[in-house]
Image (cartoon, rainbow, N blue to C red; front, side, top):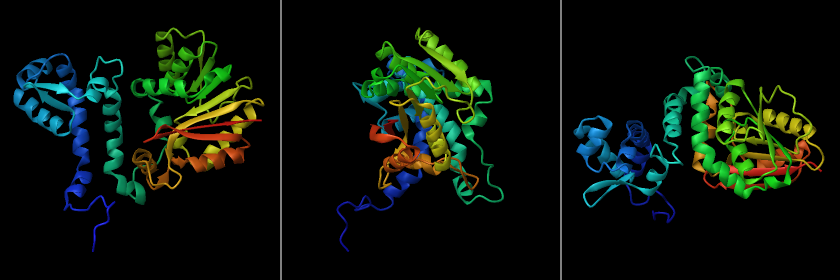
Length: 344
């Protein structure tokens, strides 16, 4: 039998399967290096095992073993006998970098790991399966956990927020209601680019407290305000010409999404618009991998806590809700879709 030219396993034994099965070790090694400050120490000039060991207060043998793995993962390299971070590591995993989001990766791996180790029970359900619950709503009841989650979200998303502000024309709108607006990073980036835009962030009480801190840090208190509440339960004020869901919809099933879209349609004036940024699958559901994994993770205790939709499904949902001129595009081609539509 001739190997298919597009067969990813062609010419290999068990190497590809081993790589897939043991990818969790890669994640553990990288997040450990982040937590210990390995990449930050290298960025600040520590270039040998002994120098790094002194900076991060660790035995040089342990540093060497961790560094060998990081070199194998193409996170660091040796140049002229000294360690150096690869460019993306230098930009995103060095703690004092403006674009640092290492804390988000550490936080996410630690939070998601129990779900993935128990995935079989989650899918099957039944006796012994963890209870199904709305993870976000439950977690945000704890003020300290809400702060950690929201601050990690800001660090992970502020660069993406500026990308959205660059590619979506917020200048067409006067007042924007950002439902589930989290840290406020998207509102902050949009207001910094669009001088006359006014924004209200609606999210849970412990979340908006953190958002208010970020808004104040950027000096935007006069243009961005907050409303504490659950967007399923709260009334939407009628004087906003843009209403958005930026990454919460993936946590809900289609009937719940439809209820929200109809609620938004009723609240918008004629000529108003909805903006959705969400994990999104290709129309043929062949991926991308990241949203496909998130979709699988949405099974908890044999129940479905959320669903990742394709662009075609978003078109259908919005059309059923009454919206027209639906536009679907990728904000990040490996992960996030950008969808907008209008009330005429």
